[in-house]
Length: 143
Length: 143
Image (cartoon, rainbow over all chains, first blue to last red; front, side):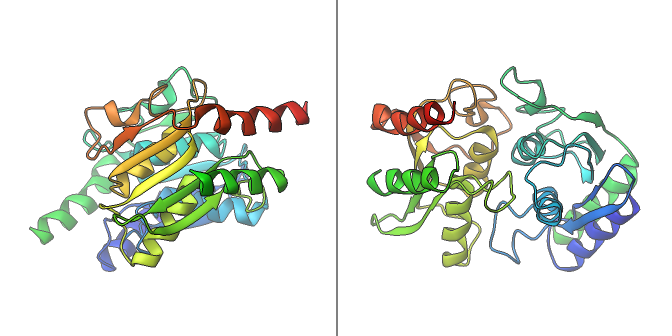
């Protein structure tokens, strides 16, 4: 989560919503790390999670990351949650809960849908306050 | 839809699940067209819709496509439906319904979630049989 927090802080420094994500293999080796790039890349899908998943899959030369863990500072939105399922991620670890935009424990609850073909193990609320503070500080400074 | 069907057929010829998508602006001009590339790109998120949305946004140098229409041969999955919302697409036109994998009229029903911030106008079932036949032929040939 330290590396994901670093990515979130780097995103904030670029003026992006500060969320960071890291993909690790079964041995704990970092395969990919990314922060939000929606504004820089003119890409509404350039969320930290999706960028890290794509990086890791490219490195592995496989669209399936069945032994991997995704660590992200914020509860993934429905798009990223569905992507986590599509990439067959084994374990999802996230920091702050997102009652408004989240799609794991809130909203569309992607992994709970009967049509979800692959649901990862989910560990939420890891270093929740620290992860949330980066977001709160960012939005407070913008108001 | 003709162009989306062409993209679906081209995807089938590459051995990809045959789905095609096109993004048009308010004047009906084609901004982007793509077919599935999940295997070729080693990217489980490389669905036709997401690729076309990213192409169009790159062309526009904006992550928001508020005046645009996305035409796709198959009901979008939850990931793509949430991306359509994130890119602020105005109108979604799709061909075949997808009771197993769809996330618009089925499963997570992304646009119906109370936390969905932007829902496009949805027109489903356009040239439904033709769009579905390409998929049925593809999977029949693989069995």
